[in-house]
Length: 292
Image 1 (cartoon, rainbow, N blue to C red):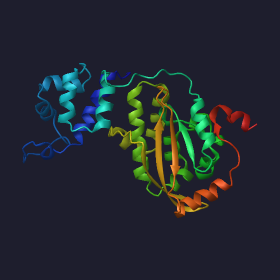
Image 2: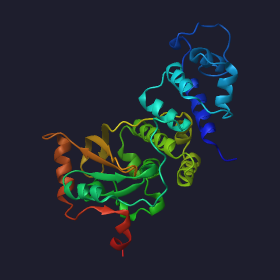
Image 3: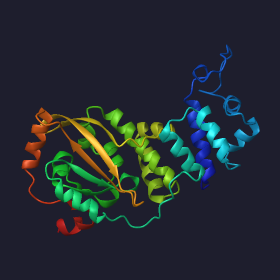
Image 4: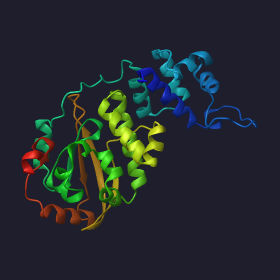
């Protein structure tokens, strides 16, 4: 049965209350055994000052959440900014960004120009579902030959879980993979019924137990920066800053750039990698021509 937006919200509410500790939420302790992890429905209802029946129907997807109730749930469930945005998007409320139209993904000219200018640092253009839409030669030297990856598998999260070379490069793979799943969850709120997203999640759920567990947790993350500790098969260990900038045109495209501090061993290693690359950036639309 197809899920409704309200059922997606209910799944998030159930997952979130399972992550909370009653004592941390200011609830009195109890010596009786708890049948479920985290908070009970009646405890969330009490914290949000709503009836247990109303909250139960929210979790069951039988009623749409009003704006005042969402405000109280933010407090009751101790949501951070990313979780709040995610919940509001699932609820279809006014401060969530509009749902995206499912148009064909093509690299924006401005993004391509940026890739043209980034010759000394690895960079990718990511689209909806974190699909890899374009890359520069430095990204190929760092990660893999993206042009050789079939279109339907050229996805950042999928590669992180299924490509043994890329997976093995990440020294903190569990940390990086969990962040990627959380970012994909954030993506899902914008268009939870996207069939390509469902296909991607279904494939990874079957193939990887860690993905299956982390996806069910409903953790979300929109952070545009962080550090990656990599072990490259040629230049060795790298500590890189990973920064991501989202476009403002509603396309969902973002530019991911990996850099290293000047004078560090990682910076020198990137210089070695980029010295091997002399051609311009590549995007998925041009891959067929490049591989003929």
